[in-house]
Image (cartoon, rainbow, N blue to C red; front, side, top):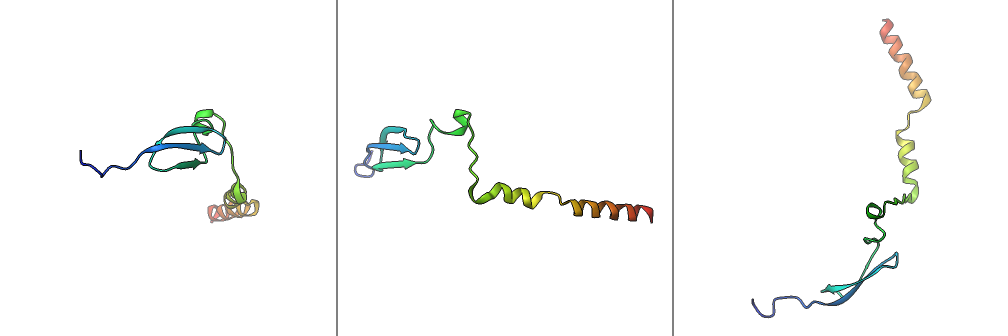
Length: 83
């Protein structure tokens, strides 16, 4: 192996927002993460629904059928069927 081309691996700590601390080796000193194996929803089986800026309501409002629109479609279909 060539000398001087490999990075310097040092002891480092990975800290999650849930409080989990993992000690490993890396080229970076301290790493902070938002999600880890202790708090990931797929592993824990608990799913959190984060609704930032009302995205769920915005989606529902955009794609929900409006009653007057549905009624207008029914009357338009009946008129074309009778012609």
